[in-house]
Image (tube, rainbow, N blue to C red; front, side, top):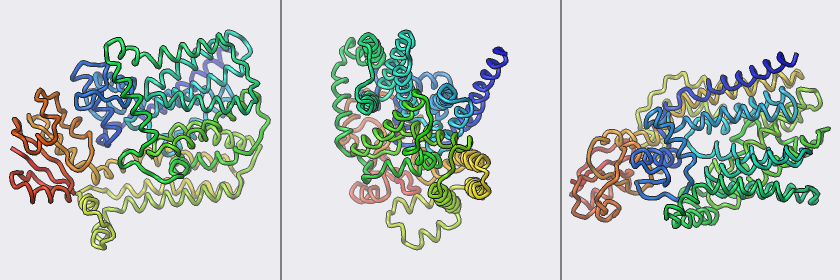
Amino acid sequence: MNQIKTQKLDLNYLLIAGLSALILIPFLGRVHLFDWDEINFAESAREMLVSGDYLNVQINFIPFWEKPPLFIWMQAASMKVFGVNEFAARFPNAIAGIFTVIALYHIGKKLFDKKFGGLWVMVYLGSILPFFYFKSGIIDPWFNFFIFLSIYFFNNYISYEGAKQKLHASLLSGTLLGLAVLTKGPVAILLFSLSVSVFVLLRKFKIRFSIWHLGVFTIALLLTGGFWFIMQIITGNADIIWRFITYQIELLQTKGAGHGGFFGYHFIIILLGVFPASLFALPMFKRNSDYSPIQSSFKTIMIILLFVVLIVFTIVKTKIVHYSSMAYFPVTFLATCFIHGLLNKKWRTPAFMNLLIVLIGLILSLSFILLTLIAHFKDDLLASGLIKDRFASANLMANVQWSGFEILIGFILLTGVILYSLFILKKRPTYAIYSLFLSSILFINLSLVFIVNNIEGYSQRTAIEFYKSIRDEDAYILPLGFKTYGHYFYAQTQEHNNPNYYNRSWLLEGEVDKDVYLITKIHYGENLMKTRPDLELVYAKNGFIFLKRK
């Protein structure tokens, strides 16, 4: 009997791993990498391969102290196998997705039962942004995964009785938190420490910690998270550590260029971006249940983590969508708690929640349907004069091919929302839940495959195709009037021996030893051509102007 149970359990893990790989790995390289973050990290990985310097993160072959190297190492290893391309840059996060859903199933099964674990996988992959980031080339999926596991093992530590179990939990928690630091920096310690501190405070300091176990946790954290910093000191690059710390402080205090936002920015992002899980999570903030101590403590620390993330990144002036992505774990856990109780007939869906699910689902699906019709009404939109920005208007003039099939993708989500409402009215919650989340998984996956590619055609593709076209030329490339990392990665720039290359004024006006390509947006480029008759117009397209200085 035990062998039968073990075999069944193994098949569940294999099934989840196989299905997640099937939906996460294909088509990773279908769309160009997006500025800034995706291209930024991929370029650092490419420069590691070119320079052979795997210790130092670089951009344009000068030190880049904003991020530690762990994720860049993953991308560099991937590029060693698959080549320098979009698939290789995104492949590590597809692996992160596979590991994440396996961990969700395992943790859900251990805390509750197999049904809970399976539901958590479905809820996580069936919510928009959590799925989306596994198809990206940004750092956060691995960073969040390490922090989440560190908190999970902390919860195990306070729940276990045996000294050996506590020792293992403290070792794993410290090591995983260290990996998070090595992935993105000390903000991992901030999120972990705040969450644990609030948890201990709520427990009125009744939690006992062994000094020995705290020592094991600390040593594991310092050795793992401090590995790169120690290597920098040994190799005489201690100044990079200071610059790294200074940047992290500035990031908390200042608003990044183009990355501002209103006070409730991240609350809205979580509500809409983690739909539909975000709405199913709402009842769990006040709903009590007959949970065991370990279940109850994990639920408490997940709620604390959620609010820590939202509050910290609300205080941080730079507003970027993925800054609050750590919240995906607690939100989907709370949603699964409610759904698990609902399907076990413990609870009913509140009327306000059903109304919000249908309302937001309709808004998202209908907005998406309108988006797929852009090719049909863009001429009228441009003629109306509603778009005041000339660059945005010129972007819309791009020749992007829409087959007409894309509109059906929006109807998949719409169908799921309609089926949810019908099954809820018929008091069949199981069919309602599965209809909504499975349609959402299909909707998100097809959108990433067929829609994002077209959207990219209106935004950056013109510039990226130009970078690729001059890849074999021995020339300098200088973007003017906007920030980009695209020319480094897609033109595959090499390290320049001439130190004047890093002098913007020299590239614009000095005695250059190579041709200089200038890439600008339409308003900036037109003004530049009026004052600089020595610049040759290569061509202008979709809001971009490409000039050459011989």
